Length: 204
Image (tube, rainbow, N blue to C red):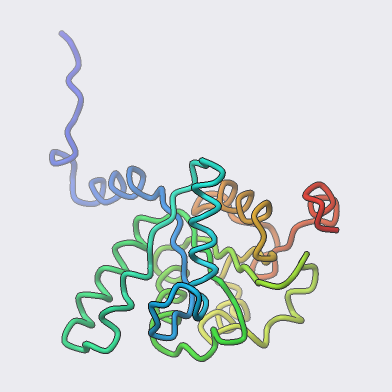
């Protein structure tokens, strides 16, 4: 007698959740401080747009989930619950998070802290902390002044898995491809790339 493949809706609830997690956690969630702006050259959205441009240019397989859909609803508090549910669903479907960190990131006391806390506490995905304006990162403690409290608290509590790197194409692509909820960077909340890796990318 031949074997029949079990359908997802025939699984017990706890296995159905595990099935869904394995099947759909294939995206990269990009978080940044948009400052409520839609101008593609204003705020940190310009770095997100550069990520998308690299994706098209390289014809790469990296899949970026657009977190900027939240911007239009920030001032409409009647939609906040819907926006929050949408962000959480996207995070649950992600394998890692790129967090773009600049001097303005700490000013966001609303969405970015929510994204960070949910990514680390609930989804247990690694954070790829990307800093524009640097060639290489070998002392992330020197950059902690730009961290949102949600990130700093979790690094201190040793619950975050973070790789710190410059906002540069080669290290970003390597980290997005390599790290996920099953493969964390070494170093806990203080992960960095080696000097030899930066030399191979021509950044050191």
